[in-house]
Every structure is written in structure tokens, then in C-alpha cells.
Amino acid sequence: QVQLQQSGPGLVKPSQTLSLTCVISGDSVSSNTAAWNWIRQSPSRGLEWLGRTYYRSKWNNDYAVSVKSRITINPDTSKNQFSLQVKSVTPDDTAVYYCAREDRTSGLDYFDYWGQGTLVTVSS
Amino acid sequence: DIQMTQSPSSLSASVGDRVTITCRASQSISSYLNWYQHKSGKAPKLLIYSASSLQSGVPSRFSGSGSGTDFTLTISSLQPEDFATYYCQQSYSTPTAFGQGTRLEIQ
Image 1 (cartoon, chains in turn purple, yellow):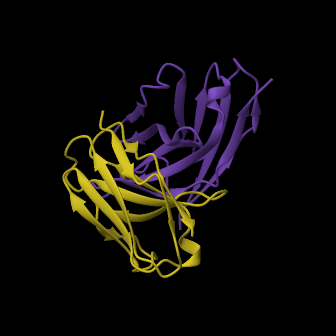
Image 2 (cartoon, chains in turn brown, yellow):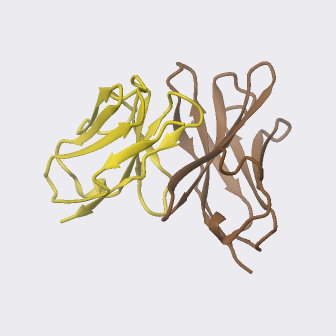
Image 3 (cartoon, helix red, strand yellow):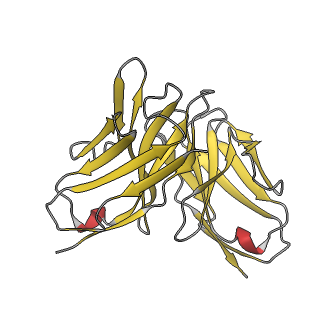
């Protein structure tokens, strides 16, 4: 059974960097059949995909255009986890942030396991 | 990028009702369409993948259909635990995209 455990601060000041971590159990961040994603949810935007990291002979990243200039997703193989950093946050980045596994085994690609969610509020 | 549009945005129904939610893609996505249920304070839950395949453990009252640009999620007989927000998601191309959600409320 795959489990994803998120951690990170719930309050970030404007212009600072939001940082979250997702620890994986029951799978490997280096899996060749999965991708590791960050998704956020807010009342104004619904579910918004932010980006992902995955290993296919080498590490790859994809990012949403809306945050591409501010976002970094990194794997940590030594701790079997991956992280999210969003720079220069504004109140518009206030949301519940989720990490999620994307099963890419069959080419159908869906998010089958999710972290518990972290409410991040951007406020001074 | 592919845009996903759901309708209706909200829906009131009663226990036992049959409910259908529609999702439309801005271009053909074949059958690369997934459905999720989201309850407040919980992580989204995968219900249907590849337009019509039921995820393991999901009750059979949930079903999905469609291909190309038009898709539906049907709940055959609403149960109290089904009141939630439902999202479609296309996995045909990167970036993936979700619909704006359909809030299913108790009538």
C-alpha cells in the first residue's frame, strides 16, 4: 500500500518561499512507472496541477506554465521523498497543497495515491 | 493546452437519485479521462480512469462513459456519502488539466 506523508509550514509571508516535502512509503521515488506530482486546490481555482518529477533513465520535470518561473520540484532518493518550492509567493498562492502519485504503468496516467493535504496561507 | 469544462457547476439531488455530470474537452483526448471525488478536508479520490474503468474499491453505482471530447460520470443511486465535489481530468497530454468541479449537494 502506497502512502504519502506531507510536511511543511502552514503560514508563509508574502515574497518568501513556500517549501513542502512528501515522504513516500510503499513505492520508490525512482520508480520507472510512476511520476510524483504537486497539485493545489483553492476555492477560486479548483484543482490546479503544478508539476511533477519522474525518473526514466534520468530525472525529468514538468511544470505548469502559470508557475514555471517560480517552482522547483526535486526528488531525494536517499530519503525516498520529493519536495516543492515556490518562490516569491503572494496571497494568490494560498491553497491546500497535495502531493500525488501518478501511475504511468499502462500509459493511461492517473493520480491514484494522494497525500493528506497541507493548507498553506500566504499572509504577513 | 487542453481545457476541460464540466457541467453543471453545482447540482442538488436526493438520496436514491440518478445523477449525471458532464465533462467536455477542448480537443479530442481519446479515452484519457479520469474522474475524482473530493470531500472537504480530505484528499481527492480516484473513481474512474480511462473514461470508463472503475478504480479498485469504488462502488459499482459509479460509472463513466465517453470518448473524444464528451464524457459523463453517472451515479446510479445516490448515497449520503456521495455528496462531494467531482472533478474530471485529462491525461492525454502535458500539462494535465482538471475541470472546474461539480458540487453535488443534498436537496
